[in-house]
Length: 459
Ligand code: GDP
Image 1 (cartoon, rainbow, N blue to C red):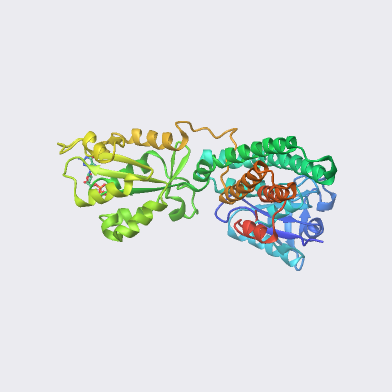
Image 2 (tube, helix red, strand yellow):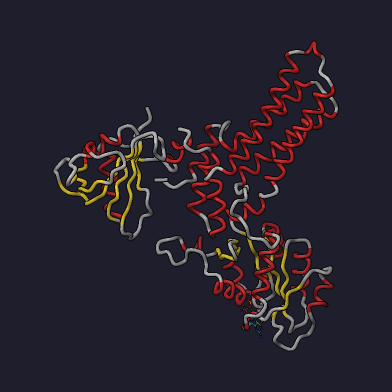
């Protein structure tokens, strides 16, 4: 029998209420030991899911620990599918901690990170991709990221995975029949039919993979680097973007600012400005970190914003930057167009093999709207729609899809060259297994541990 686990499920910090959660067979028994109700004295006497008022009391000396609302939720209709007791204490660090300590003293064990959600998965309440969506939902950086996670939590990705698996099963059944009755001579028709089905699977997998770049950006943010020689306007641009697009979650006290503050929200796209500190503090990225490292930073970036100064001649540094951005997904700005110009956007565009150049005057706030629109166009083809779309946001899912894609291509090749069906069967089974790891049908214990260890305790 699984232990009864407990943890603080709300964030620690000043707040009206804090929630301690307990899950497992002993939940009600343990809660009864430390709860004394006002109208309903014992939690056992309350109805399932009835919020009950009273006190948490230390059974050793009958001292009051906190004034709470408590609820008992009977299995199986709960998040974990187990008995759950949730206690609404006062917020802040102390009340929740004291209540948790009492639960632990009276028979519960401290939950591991993500253990509530892991139980929800193990008990069949969520599949693995839905469980993973829970953490993405909590960490969503913009409303669009949130919508993508919510859609995954609702099971929309799972449905697609189920559809693919269903066709794979049909193929497997077809193959087995043909292998079991070899005397009936496997006709060419069989090969053709199987190939058609396998191609449908390939198409479905490709469709999902094609959403992965966009999905990853929504989940992890768009890694953006601003490049430009000293004084070209990099800090000014950063400030302008930050001013117009409130950095995400900066006004929530107690959040780790240095991590979260780097994201800005451009129409739902979380923009993560990489090496911001480096760019802010030093005169020049290339100068400071060297050409090789700059190349690396550029290589890792999803987007480069390169700025040039229209009011001064192109320098050697400008040339270096031109070389860096030629091949990459980049947006080029010609800044300081309010000053007398030495060259124009057409001239710069020619040097950049015809790349589009946006005229800006960052200090006057001109051109920044065009920059933002260009970012949106670039990553969503001008269309920021997430609701109702199924996006692959998770790199793990993308990797599994790519493995499955290889399997199904091998199968199609094999069918084309009419190799024996039991060889094809191996590819199809591998494909099924690889796809199954997304929803967790076929996932190993190690992978589960790794996934849930990324969760916070109490989730
Ligand atoms: P960085 O070294 O690339 O970060 O450049 P800064 O953003 O610090 O800008 C350097 C100087 O150029 C500052 O004095 C800015 O006010 C000024 N500046 C930035 N953009 C413009 C612009 O579009 N026009 C003009 N005239 N000055 C600008």
